[in-house]
Length: 273
Image (tube, rainbow, N blue to C red; front, side, top):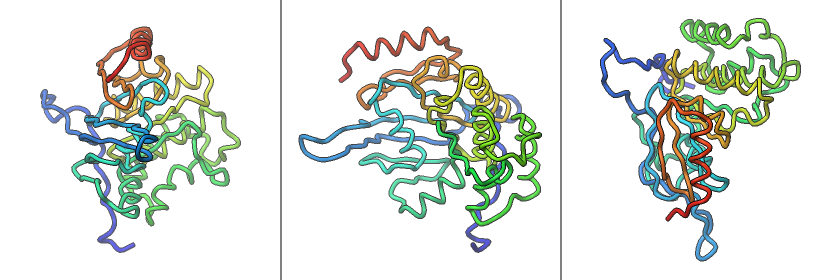
């Protein structure tokens, strides 16, 4: 990779504007009029229908909806994992609509961090090797500033004593901490967390959600989390709801799990055009 192809380090996000003013945070990811249709004719499935959504810098957004509502598809479109049938997508200030697969891979690698239900760690690599894997895939090593940032993350996530352990030697909660550290290491524009607590016991799930909230509030990271669990969504500062592929409701926190569960029940019981 030539020096010209390399992306300079992204400054650490900050949720508070300089001077503590009430200036609206910038948008780190957005979609406008996006839709996703699978198949054609009478058998076509409209997974997402003309959705507009913005993720502000430093925010923690939970995306909820009944099964089949299109929430995961929408987040995958926003993160560049899927290409919409129509509409436009931006990550940071760059529109990614229409980019080819190679260009989208670079965008995802440099500007999006992923935390999945299945952890997706490399079993033959130790914790440190897993954390710096995105840098290796980008053909470089962390520089001094990035190494200091990774060291800070490791401390905050309670991994300092586990750096030479492999995933098989860690609990599920510890593995998800490693996945979070890997996602945050490159200071991406957006963190996509897709059912990040689905494979965890209740205590580990609560710890992981607290860590994601800390990453948003203390580190200024922007997080979009897909979840079906109202208790998980209650850790976010905003909840958006999808039904039948459309964005039908938005609530801002702090929100309780009971209120979120009630909103979900109303979505599942009522028709949505």
